[in-house]
Image (cartoon, rainbow, N blue to C red; front, side, top):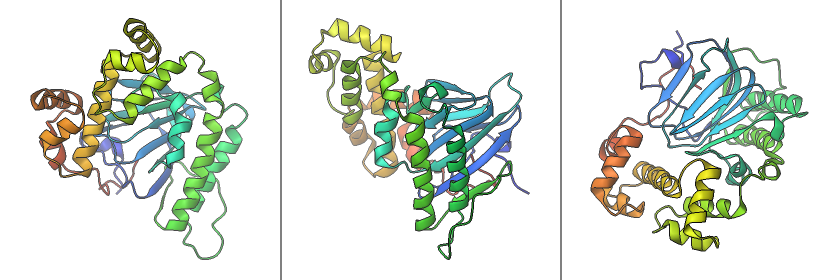
Length: 310
């Protein structure tokens, strides 16, 4: 008997392994929810076709309606489900490793904490049919064995899931997802005229090297602004202070180091820009709900015991 993610005892909702491409179509009713206190090892792409969903990652929240693409990056605690008061949430979803080029396409749509949200007004108007076709093609291509031509896309059923195990099937599925990401994000940078180019530059400096000794003054100097003007613009346009953005980036970096290396916790703290191991332990526990050492030894979000993923 399949187990749905919302029926799992919290906080055990698994996510598919990041090396695969897993795609599905759900139409969920009120009460559906998924909670991953450690986030996922893979990226999660959701495209809503009906109803409304709520997705929360870290301190960021996005409410998705028809035509909205919401993407959750890996390594940050998240939860999502049917938006309270909505009758249902119908959506396509994909777990995978994102191709490197996609980060640049998604960056203009970034909120915070690895959340990217693009509404219909930013590129999906007129493309909905093509995006739907690409998802159906992805679902079919994920099942390709490599023998003969890939199966033709068909009318998907609610709850249908496919996992691309083989290299050819995986790459074909990613090609369809790349088309979707490009269609949805096309023109997003042009529409984000509200974000000052100097603030984008400072945000990129933080993201590229969170362990560097950034300060409000050093970031302001890097983008030719006074510290007070820079701090005001950054907070006004991105919704959080420069130092809060830096702390969040450092915590995400630390979580990835804990997952991917065997560095001692003290060295992870230093490599992530934290001068005090005590302070690092405290803020890491606040963000992830567990101290760094326990985070590293906790059960990974691996193959997933559930019969259904999302």
